[in-house]
Length: 421
Image 1 (cartoon, rainbow, N blue to C red):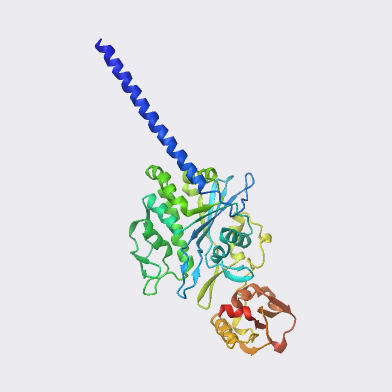
Image 2: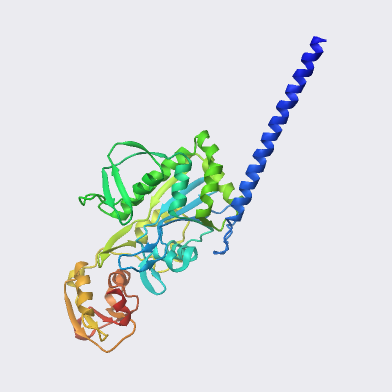
């Protein structure tokens, strides 16, 4: 009798235990299903047409980290811009990932005007950013993911922060941006939301020391943080936090990936050997116009990277992929600048800007009214037209065998140039 009672109690305990497990599993399945529905509701954006990859071909993702937009010092409302641009290419045949950082200052053509690539998002959203990168690199973007600063901070906070060894002293306070940085070189820190934002934004210290080339320096910090982030995802404890982290962050994300595909690739990248991730940054030259930095992408310096990405360089448009030469002797070029507007000082301002870039032999004058600026270039300098277009901030160029007055270049400033003053 006692044995039968014990047996019944054991069976009841086993049944209760199994019931408890079933209830837990049911709740877990219900939770994950509701999470999937929530993700599904907030993904699959129709803002950009889906460009499905071909079977076995590399898959290209454009990752956009957005700033907050806001009000400029002159009280002008500014739309959100892409503060971070990353091309992530996954090669399924080689099972590896190439991460390519694109400087936000990269000089491209937007709506017929020269501008920095980070402005593409402000003008036309993710679609414009995708088009700009496709033209720049000569490849097709299949998917995009954009995330604002709050989403970025939520994710870093959600996984418990990322561990970074600080590479250099960083001391900077900017009340306007609410950016406060105080890190010492060699410190091993766990950077969370606010501190991780400060780390990737930092360029200069209050005393003027910092990165020699600010944007490329920022990229090195961004890649350090990405590597640390991926390493952190290897922890089982962090993986358990991911569902809730995704739930609190997904509203800050836009993507043309549907929920199922998004989760598939996230899972794939988390499980991949981190040695399969290769990190690159576009190579080029940084120049300054009116104290604004511009990055000039140089195709010849990126030949190996383009080959790695499977890009046929002949498909890249000349306007965004120059064969750049360092042999242009700017100081000896004979340049005439004509003010073709009724506003005084346009030619003088242009001349001052060009002298900062190394053009010294400049003559000023006036011409007939002109709406759109252009310049006339001697044929022998045609191979330098890209660098000249960038330096002059003028796209329209005419090549001739001989110029009036023995000038190598005649610049005619139209009314469109006044917007740049």
